[in-house]
Image (cartoon, rainbow, N blue to C red; front, side, top):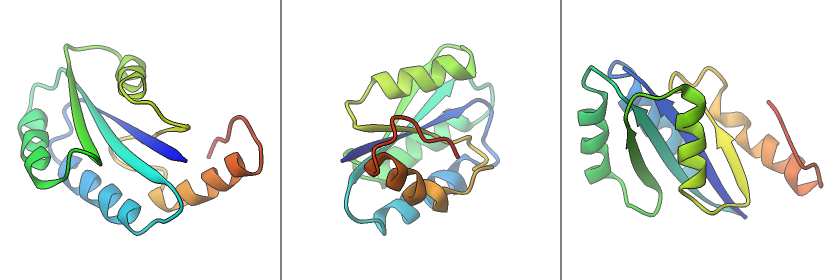
Length: 120
């Protein structure tokens, strides 16, 4: 099973590095599926894109990528991130990780049990 985690980011310079690092750290400890984190930066006016470019040098391309978009809606950013990857499961996380990343395995269990859609 391949999982794509989409994180939209607009003016998130204060939190984006910590959020990416937290997702990567958590996901690298998971087993039983492959994954990729795609941050969709959508027209930030702060240092978000520069921070993400720095993170691109830190993490392998097979687990982390950035899509930079002209300003668009949050839903456009998520859609762009999802459509950029072929996966079995598509996950969306807000940049502030308001839904704790530790719940992803529970969501994937629901998919494995045969549900078409799992919301958490």
